[in-house]
Every structure is written in C-alpha cells, then in structure tokens.
Length: 291
Length: 126
Image (cartoon, rainbow over the protein chains, first blue to last red):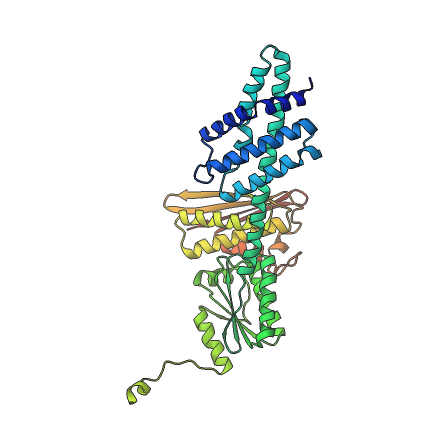
C-alpha cells in the first residue's frame, strides 16, 4: 500500500479519535494560550485543519506541498497563523498547533501497523517530514504577518512624525522628534516647503528639542533645509538648542553662524513675532482696574 | 556590535549612551561621546562598507571612561592627515566627521592601511 494513501485512510477511519487526542494534547500543552483563544475556536480550527490534511494527502500525497492539492491546507494554516500572530501568540505557541498533531498520528499509525516494523518506520518518517514542513510554513506565515505590521507602523511613523504647525499669521513651526535619517529629512523638508507655499508664511521655526543627537549629518540636513526655505523667500530660525548640543556642535566645527538659533521655541517665537511686526501682551492692568 | 545599516547607528548610539550613563558621565560628556560615535559609525557605513564597534568601559582608580573602537575592512585611508582636515570629504558630507570626533574625544587613534581597512579608537574620560 502506498504510504500516502495509508495515512489518508488512517486519518479518515479514526478522524474522531485523532481529533480528540490532538485537542487533548493541545489543551494540555503549556504553550496553549487559553487567555487568547477560546476552546470552541480551537476545536473548530483543529477539525477544519485535520479534514483539509486528510483531503490533501489523499489527492496529492505527502511529498509535494507546493502542488495544488495542498493549497487549501496552506491557506487555512496561513489564516490561523495570521490570527494568532495578531492575537499575540509567540512563534512557538503558533507552531505547536501543527507539531502537536504528531503524537496522535504516531499512536494511530503504530496501532495500525503493529506487526510490520519496517513499514511503520517508513510511515512515521513521512508523517514527521510532512508535519515539520507544515510547521515551518506556519512560522513563515506568522513572520510574514508580523513583518507587514512593522512595515505599516514604519510608514505611519514617518507620516506622524513630521507635522508642520501654524503658530501665527506668517509663522510656521516644525517640531522635530527622534532620529533624523536621510529618508525622514527628505519628507520633513518637503512638508515644510509645502506648508510655506500653502500659508505664505515668512518665518519658519525648526525646533530640535526632541532630537537626541546632532551630528554632522543632522547639521548638514538642517543647513540644507534652511537654505531651501530661504530660496522660497522665508526666513528660518532653529530653536531647541540645548547646552550640551551647543558644545558638541562647536567641537564638531559645524558653522551655524548665518542661521538664527534660539535655546527654546518660546524665544524663537518671540523673535518671529518681532520680525513680522506682531505683538502679544498680557491684558493691561489698568484696563482691568479702570472700571 | 555590527554596523551595517543606518538603523544600526541608531541602536549603537543608544547603547553608547546607556554605557556613558552607567559610567556616570555628565550630560555634556554623554552627548559628546555619542556624537563622536555617530560620526565614526557613519564613516564605516559610507566609506568602509560596514564593520563593527567594540565598546569597553574603563576604570582607572577614580577615573572612569569609555573606549570605543570602530573597525572596518574597507579600502582604507591613503592620507590620514588630509582626511582629518576640516572640510575635506570624498563623499557628500561636510568633511567634519573625523576631525570632529577627534575634538570630541579625550584620546584618539587611527590606523589605516590602503586595502587593509581602518581602525579608529576613541576614549572619553569622565
């Protein structure tokens, strides 16, 4: 009897027992996350998976997982992995789903071929190979869904981290937070210049309070942004230069001489107001006391 | 610590800062050593084709410090004196990285052989 059809037959004839054993195995395993997955869901997933494997083994054998017969099984596994990865399962917890099927299948097969050791060995080997491949596939699917989450977060972060805010008529500010690599600087510069066009602002304040390290690359990016802003006809002030950053810039030998710099955003705002001719003051004391 | 991509520089800076804090560096000294490390790591990526950074906390009596070695197997620097000169660059940078790192450190050594890679070691004392 061909190996694959024997396995298919065993699963078909003992489906209930195998399923019961398998679920017992999963429920007993330390890697099952009862807090993240309901037992009814686990039962449904296990049932669907076992049925799909049985059908696939019968149709396509256990050798070629890339064939069309296994497409359903793989899709099912990918869905389960994705759901578990999003729910917060670890990779090993996810892979245990497939790998814990070994024990029940082994014992059924052993009972079936008690008298024929050679054939039994062969059968067990093919089951091992099959489940290992499926286990690896599970991990791959798990990682893929994780990667897509990371990728999405990266793009979100890139967009989130570069807001240009309008402080006053003619004054826009760009609070920078975090690391300035070339990618981000490009986006920062684009959004700033875009905003200057939109608002017709004459002064842009770049605040670097949230940038932990200012090295020559960051300084160069800043200078380029300042130069581009000037070409657009707006003036640029860099604020948020803390004492330690100031000392470091001096030692580096970077010349920020032609750029107006201020220690805090508030200082920079005052300079900007003065330049645009606007004033903000407290309501006069006599105005309150006059009546 | 491997330095192969710009993301590695971010990780490395964080590690250097943590060690500097642990050694009791002041905020200014932390910033100086982190910035110097950032420059040298970027040189490794831009010119050395990737390499590694070796970090070593130092303690000499009451004096505490950090020693950082930046090693690559890149093409090497033909004229070290010229490379250290402010404003000289073969890439698109400001040409201040190497000289700046030297000024930000207490001790600075550079060994380079054309075709044999470069090793820059800086020490910053508290």
